Length: 322
Image (cartoon, rainbow, N blue to C red; front, side, top):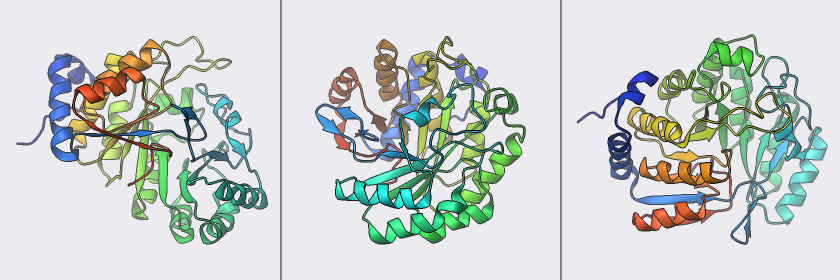
């Protein structure tokens, strides 16, 4: 029987939460099994262990878009490698230190793009001279750049998918609109590299704006995983006083996404609010059949055991394709 498919947020909200979670959970377990992969991303510490998949910014702390939800704050926690020779040196060191791989990211120019062409030769060199896996958080790309990722041996491509023209303008300060987003998705999908889209729940100042449209954009492609990110208001940004979407809202979106895209495993990103919000979000995500959680709360691990899930840990980004 074909699962229920939701195309608008009002329809998702109209369902009884318990019934919606159960429907999504049963479908998830039927296809993906009763297991939970847990992740320690970047160089974060968790339960006495440290992640071995650091994030590297190819633009240092620079970003022309200066988005309202970030204002370059996320870049501050990354290793800076703004030149190809620096990237090679950093990766040689990380490889010797035992890192499993790297997440390459950075700030965007005023067109939402990163300087990938400048770094492609260095990325190919890293694949040839180290054992590091390379994940790329792409930003907006054209077909030529996407083919370049394939040619130099990138392991998987990640992209934030936004489904609202208003969000693109007001939050990202990007005038190009959704046409550029759709084109980037098409370009990345054409490479046949593992494609891991990210959708940020509540990106539009804590409100649900274009998430369901983003889901439809993603559903048109074969993806290796879908990462659910939850708006985490950061200090010294225009969103620092914004209320993040409620855990119930996040759980409803996860459920709707599962019913729309049943075959892909879902990850709950490390980027989500802390404290009681995280605990409740994690538990509801489990009830919705989430397959992966980065930095799960202790309460979520206890809940997973109660649910009879097989739990395994990985010291990588939750966006890794397996």
